[in-house]
Length: 402
Image 1: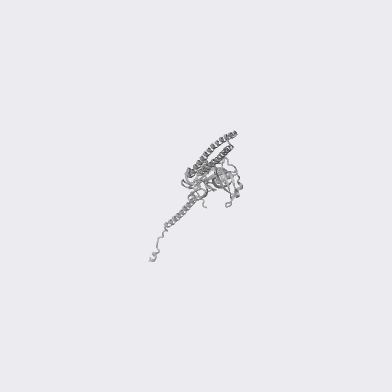
Image 2: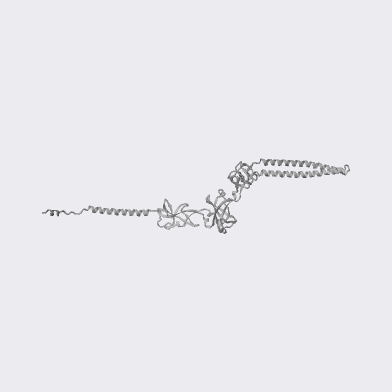
């Protein structure tokens, strides 16, 4: 056999199965990875928080249903006074502090008064001198009257001359004239004493009415000069106010003033006491318009008084169409109507707790302004507004980004 024939001799073998198995497992692994990734993506999408709009359950007052107008203003005392002395001098004594209560006529401060006290003592001495002179004149008058009586009797018996009798008559007239002059001198001296007493009184500062001291503007040793602006001098020593006359001054737009009348019921809410509403009435409407603001000043008098109310507190006034009844005085829990949905035949809200929606059955009441009264949730809780079918009990939720 030739060598070339030998090269044609070979054993036929079946192709190896290993490469095919490797390719098949590679495809299966790739398919598995894709399936796992898809499932993971789908689960991630299903577990992602549902974006929702959230609102807060609040407390609302039933009086909102019959509120005609709202305005803002400040608490002011109707009776308020800055107290000073009429005299000028150095403050010697001050008997009050901020918050002190004073009674009508009570002395609350005193200026140095040595000079006017000396003037008063001098005037009192002059009164005593004038009274002593009057007493002396009265004795002289009594003697002149007795002498005149005797002279008249003697003249009738021709025991004295007419000239002597005329002299006795003249003496009586002088005595009477002296008495009149001395009475006038006593009156003048007493007037001088009263003037000196007024001078002393002007160094005292008294409370004009029952009040509370709001501010203390001077200290002992300060010069009090009420009618000038001298350097380092003080005008008013203290400022007092009658807390029983506190009222609210509110600015109302002139276009709305026709909706307000005297004695109209109101409710006052103070920024310092947000959970308290005090009954009030319109006391008076100031008959002028502020050009710069186009508003009319309305003064509201408190019907209910609270010792926590202080001058210059910010206040909001609700002008009402009728008086608030006792049952309408307390706030109710309310929420926006869109937060209430029907689920399984019950009215439900979805409260947000730990970033998940929690279905809470509620009972609804009447409308309170733009809100609806609800029972079953508390004021301050956050709930889902207009929840859709994706929001269920336990659904993860997140605030809707706008």
